[in-house]
Image (cartoon, rainbow, N blue to C red; front, side, top):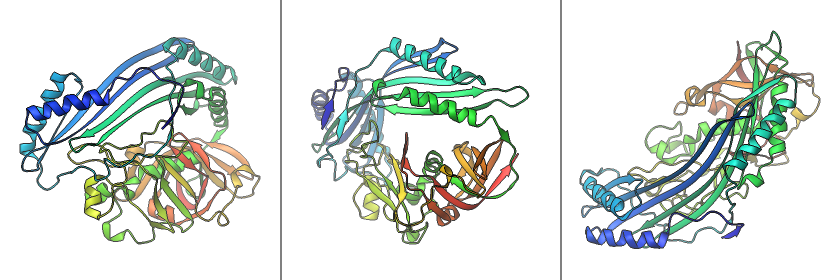
Length: 459
């Protein structure tokens, strides 16, 4: 792994920790175990009208230890105590817990936990310090307020930097370690006009360090979006042609990621079933992949909670689910290799890393209407809200408030308040077009995506 610049001193020493754990396991006559540890140092600031609102510095450490007893039953425990005494207690608790392990669900070591990790460009940045963060955020808030007479405040904002370490070791010789740094800026402005409701919008930027953040772009984007919502009107309840922005479409697909999650499928919590994996679920030109190793995926680790190397996985191809996301245990059930998407636990959870959505056939089904004058009437959705409450992932349905605009004859008017509802299976099969331009967001990459005949309910 290549590295640029330097970061703060590390907390986790993989060789020293491995030696201690091997000694403790021998003392307790434990032959099979694994351990995952993480450490993070975080600095964050918030401001309010030029004054500091919150300054926070934290150091968080955690270790999770799994122990298999002589009957191959699993026990697990976690601790924040990195001392030898703390680790020894954790081993004892995990060993005792193994007597009550689930005989029907016994994870094993990933068969890929000792294979080579992917070579990635790992950029590390030094911490700039809380005083510098505060100075930058105060200036950003001031510039955003001064960008338009109607912007009265920036009620939600934050600038943070983090240094994160993660390691995995097991009794069969696996040894993983990685250190990453990340910085993030969040600006959410509020605009107010006489006799009108306040309107809000914002922007998020992520980088390896504060020096990588495009602060000016974040200010301009937050200002532009907020001002574009001042001229709002109610929308008539009806079915509309919908254009999802990249952020909104990634949010929606991410909310239904259980479709690709082998753990959710086995637990009956996904609308996808084992016997429906080969059926068409989308238009043939839609491509969806999970790309943990994409160069734009800031501060991504190269291994998961089980020590499996991460890799890019094509999820939808030719309108069908092409691959699933697997832990070690689900991979055994499906007779495939784990994909590097697992957490660490007695029943490992599985989750996507970074979604990339694109047009599988760039010559077909492309348009660029939202950038050009058109006589078509459509709804441009900027962001979806209440995803935790409005999505029923196992049924496929969604009903979500959204922020966006009604576009008529090329003119955008912000929608006062509305909800979009539908079924993800209908949506995926009724995509009209995927635009040419791939746009990077904090959670993935996607073009604008067009879907016809979706229900919008006005206030």
